[in-house]
Length: 525
Image (cartoon, rainbow, N blue to C red; front, top):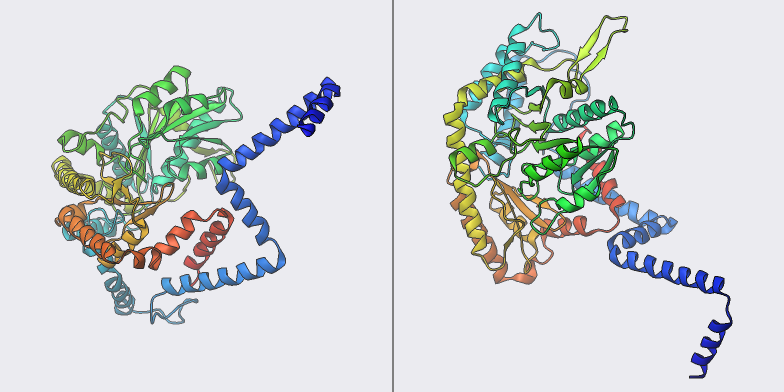
């Protein structure tokens, strides 16, 4: 009581200015403490990063990191492989070249032939693959940079763009370009909008993406000097529309929605995002890299309930769609589409002053492999509407089998209520990466996710045409039975521990070092 009275007395004698400063200081301290508690992961990461900078700790961490990277390098190498680091003095004959290549192929083909790889190989049928190979060989020397020399490639590319635009709404004026893949399509979509709005006075551009948007948008922001803002997801794992709207400023040039998002297979509310953009004169890009060539067919067949997502939605100004996924073309092709040619011109590069002549290219690359364009045209023409519909129906039915099966298992729960070919799930009872590990032992190559920790399967025609739904559920139930029989064994076993460590480690700089090292290893002979 005495101390309380003394404190009150001192408070009464203090000047109003001192009281104000003290109040502000206390409030500030409370706020910082609150932020630290809310962002415990970030705070912990900074503490760990600081400790790592100490000489003794740094040496220890570097030693362990070196051991980890050495083990990783060993796991990536082909056992018994001869490494070539210089061009041979005498050229090999055809039999030598193809003999070694076929030997290497035979050893790795079994990893996807059984139809248990999530994504990666989307068709895999021998007859279709043979057609791709023959089309490639016919146009192996072609280059669309020279349409006067290779007019057939110009024909193929323009028709692929037209067919894609027809599939994604058949709206007059929609145009586009072929690219090397989904990342370049996203990059070009962002660059085109940057140029379009720069001409309209925005010199410090910003774009708003969902937290679930593809990492290529971060790359685009990094490459092109666009400020990137992320809108959080709602409890349904779609972008929170109110949060997205609150981030819009006078410098916003682009809003982004996914159809679907890679991680959880959720389609953002494209009509709402596009309407938000249209009313403010902002661009709207729909990332359909993964879904662009299957959502139209899932929707048309009615096998899954697909909401509006393409150019029929007013306000959508660009879309990306990968032909090398569910278009079943050879890897290295995608299409980026724009509402009109004015948007598309923003991705072009033109140089009229080069002493080598006038130079122009529609995308990042100058020379491009015309053979890939030819194989894409061959794929679209050979599959036909009937082929794409058949594949979509089989994929949709496999999705329903797996989704129902997961919902019936008490220890598992879906991450989002996906109505697409991607299904993500987790477990509140078991280590989800232990389940991934055991499914891997049964041949399934599933994708690990974070925020929250989960795994997903991206269903392909390769799987669906081989009774994939039933095979997946049989293996999943058997994996869970194994865990139930010995739960402690699988709490931190095998790669489950490594995945859990990687996705839970607060110091993301260490993860960045590991991934950078991984890229170095991949490029090391």
